[in-house]
Length: 382
Ligand SMILES: *[C@@H]1O[C@H](CO)[C@@H](O)[C@H](O)[C@H]1NC(C)=O
Ligand SMILES: *[C@@H]1O[C@H](CO)[C@@H](O)[C@H](O)[C@H]1NC(C)=O
Ligand SMILES: *[C@@H]1O[C@H](CO)[C@@H](O)[C@H](O)[C@H]1NC(C)=O
Image 1 (cartoon, helix red, strand yellow):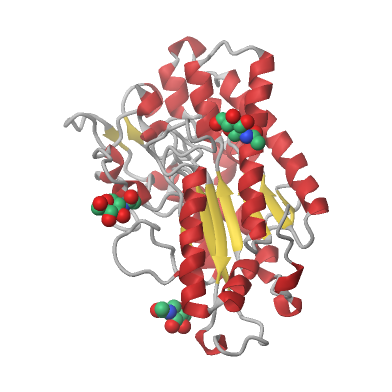
Image 2 (tube, helix red, strand yellow):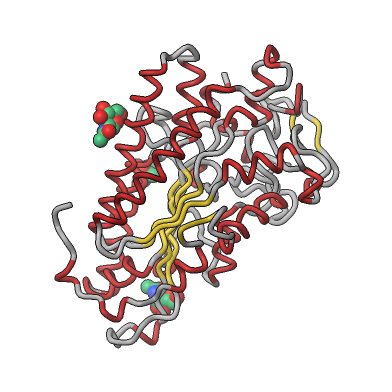
């Protein structure tokens, strides 16, 4: 059930990249631009509403009230009461809030784009009906084409080089494995994580090959501790489910080794990893430390921990809704409130190296040193 319900799949990969071009610089290629664009790749945590535009997608309760109730005052496709992390990062970076890449109508991609999709995984097979990571990469290539048409090859590459690429992905791959194969032997778990990281690495290398240099990750969260996971497994007695959390921790260890290795292999490659796992875990278990009243149950939903059914299901609207989402860490069974998202985005933006490193996003955005940019130095074979 929840397996195929993207509402409860978490950690969608987000890849945020930032590309910004002040218009007066269009023809003055020697002048550094003042803004970096933001490209976002990811899962439901970063999806600004792409899923509602996927052809053949079924109506999702996440497009119903009370999603969007606080900030936007109507559902936008964000799985939250208000803004999600990429919205706040855009705010801090002084670029416009990025609309969904798939939103119909004209787009201007000079400030970036958001390809994230609820339910998306690194592996195509995790939820094939979503914009899985490889498809997000394909859409990013369309944006590259758009930029080259509008700006010319050299300026377009400068935009890609200056941009920040923000990712939140992998959670759904591990969520799927733990539901479909709860007794997976340790050797298979290891192999699976390597497969996820292997595919992710290929995407990062492709982004680098296209000019991307500044990569930022929100790592995989405490998957076993979300209200939806605990609600599905009453036998846990309210404890976190160990397998999905253990997979996330293994993923995070290998992700960190992999990015360090890429930095040493790829000239100019810089990265940032936000320790989302521990930042969120601490909020779940010590909510009052962060100004929340409730860390375990969701604001919106029904059943144990209000872990499911926010927004209604099968035509019913049988769920409870808290009066003040800001008092809660979780808005629904797998997604944090705007209040929590603001805190998480702050950490991603300017957290200390212990939480976000080796660079934080603010530092990545500040690296506007492409004056020495020389397209001939781009390796074609990586
Ligand atoms: C896109 O936006 C930039 C400023 O952010 C502007 O200079 C440019 O003309 C716009 N391009 C198109 C095609 O609308
Ligand atoms: C959805 O289908 C329409 C009509 O066939 C097509 O123009 C559009 O590109 C498709 N969108 C996606 C995201 O595949
Ligand atoms: C990518 O994932 C596929 C399964 O979807 C797997 O067969 C392949 O080995 C993975 N690639 C890498 C480089 O790990």
